[in-house]
Length: 269
Length: 300
Ligand SMILES: Nc1ncnc2c1ncn2[C@@H]1O[C@H](COP(=O)(O)OP(=O)(O)OP(=O)(O)O)[C@@H](O)[C@H]1O
Ligand SMILES: [Mg+2]
Image (cartoon, rainbow over all chains, first blue to last red; front, side, top):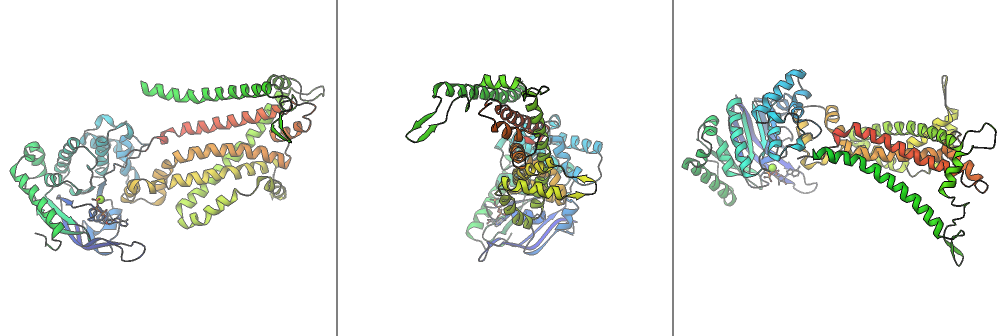
């Protein structure tokens, strides 16, 4: 079964008067089970809007979105996905552990002990086992973002939606978290829709890169990135970042991005 | 641990500042009395500085000495300071009832306005308008309405009218502050937390208890402090305008009437009012202490 199917989706924001903003026009996107797909494109091309449609945080004005074969709203009700944003959005009055437990506490029947065990497991996964009792404001930005990712994984979703989750981090932290995400993917097998501004990041992480272009927001190209599975990539690490095959894909995505600027009518490859 | 030091410093700081403030005020009082002539300063027809005679501004030690003497010349009269403390206790009790009532009512109104956007548009102007009604005017009305109230064997007491007026003043800052607090997640950069709660598929009330209510605490605490001050002022003024016996308001009026004969006496209930204010502030500080977990700064 596919994780996400977006077909002919459009989203127009009413500007109060006049025509309104066409944030998305006629977008098709399919994300297979366990696949990592990046959305990349210039600011304002509708990446976040598309992700929010998949998450049912917003509704399309045309077309349809299904997640694991269900309408997006059903999938949200069933908590079929985990989500993380550029801002960690932790609750400052809760400990790190309690933040990770939040989704389990709000929904579902997991008991106190079960929740604590799950939180401990997840914090170990993101390398924060020793910080369970800290408050969010005692953590660095990168650590907060890892807590947010652990929280997104709390209910073992088969789909992760991430909107520039590493966008506010420095390059070093960013690369470390990218490797962490690859490892998490390898161990959970979850499908991921990943929004980013970074070509390098998109290529390093993705099985497929979807290039978007603004006014109206649409998909201009889709590129495969055959650089091996996530476990493989995480194991290669820096060596992969210096591989000619990797560079070739980076160039291909860059070209697609720039041709998206000048030739908006180019068909997806 | 520098963190702990800072924290205890923060706790002692306000108490020291408060004590210093009281001393400075006392010093200013006596200095003014020493420097300005008894009749004040008169420029032409206008008195630009008030009189400093012992009738208008008794010495602090005269006030203290008067407080130690009996309340009246009756043989079994208690000392003035004891009567003042009893009055202060009474006023504090009525203020506390008014404060709690006002806080509960203010929170309910705020929840209503946060939950139903039309209610916000409909209620908020009335909440603001309610505070423009002059207190002196409504106090006797409330007392009269209360007196007509009969619910089974329940008997409406006059002090309850005073508490109602105090709550009327206390509710305003609470409802406005709590509403700002409850709706603060809507404004917080991009509303990430609200998006999260929506993604969890939980309803409005769960979101309220887990997100909106805790987020409101930094907005609520100043409102509670303001409400406490309002409740005390409201109680004293309502005591005066409804003529309620037992509290400081009535004492201030009574002693003021005999001020020319016994000028130091009226300052005792005034000092008592200051004490009530301090006690109320202390009680709110306790509430703040209980909620300190929720006072953390915003994080990313
Ligand atoms: N709630 C909204 N109301 C009105 N217009 C909106 C709204 N959300 C997005 N838009 C518009 O839709 C377009 C796409 O926005 P979107 O946030 O999806 O872009 P993006 O690709 O995520 O940009 P960035 O890379 O800067 O995050 C923009 O023109 C934006 O102004
Ligand atoms: Mg965006």
